[in-house]
Amino acid sequence: MIPDYHIHTGRCGHASGGMRQYAEEAVKKGMGEIGFSDHIPLYWLPADRRDPGLAMAEEEFPGYIAGVLGLRPEFPSLSVRLGVEVDFIPGQGSTVKSILSGYPFDYVIGSIHYIDGWGFDNPAHLEEFGRQDIDEIYEKYFDLLCAAARSRLYDIIAHPDLIKKFGHRPVTPPLELYRRAAGAMAGAGVCVEVNTAGLRVPAEEIYPSLDFLRICRLEGVPASTGSDAHAPGLVGAGFSQAVDLLREAGYSEVAVFEGRRRNMIKI
Ligand SMILES: [Zn+2]
Ligand SMILES: [Zn+2]
Image 1 (tube, rainbow, N blue to C red):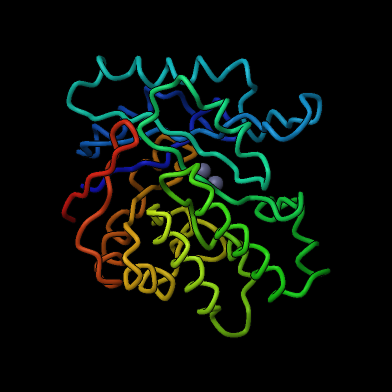
Image 2: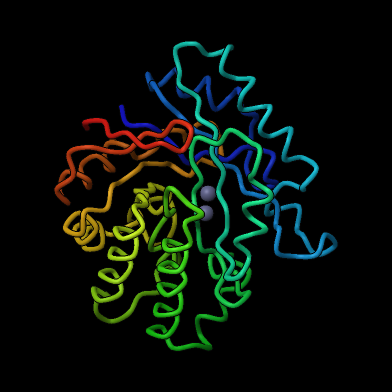
């Protein structure tokens, strides 16, 4: 079974369950490898503006790392990787590096959840979609995605077309934006994440779409896999569909990471 590298836990304030429950679920499903990727503290905001329902507080970060590492001896049949999901905020690269330094991460996932401060994937802020032109929104989103890929901060770019989450889409598929994003990921040597959370939201489609993933394949972008589980039962959710999509796009292998070094395994 393919690895699930995108797993949150109760620490982030909007997921349920402790780490052990996620690992137990993976073992129950016969999986061989998982990785935790909880949200980094909201480092770009002053401490009094950090919503505890979005990410763990800075003082909890060492406990998160220790929690993941502590699972390894408890689950000898499971490879438990240490990851983290890190929002890309332009100009904040050195802050990210200093927060992550000194910890033995296996991989770092980069994601875009904000366009100029607008949390577009938050159901509380959807009205902004009615105020801006959808093509311009997509353009801005993909500009950020390209900058994230080129930032050299990340091993994996998460849910690469998250902007479609609530079903807001341009009239025609934005193939040129996909090409730009795939070119940026290929140039930087970062993975595109095949993330099954898209199946569980109004978009009803894995991130990325087949069109986008095909372009990634043509450009030579390696792929990684994740469920974006926010509850233990969702570990590995939708993975047979993820494998089908990967094969349809031309992929025969996916990435695994150890100490931020990548290897490929057959699917
Ligand atoms: Zn995310
Ligand atoms: Zn996530």
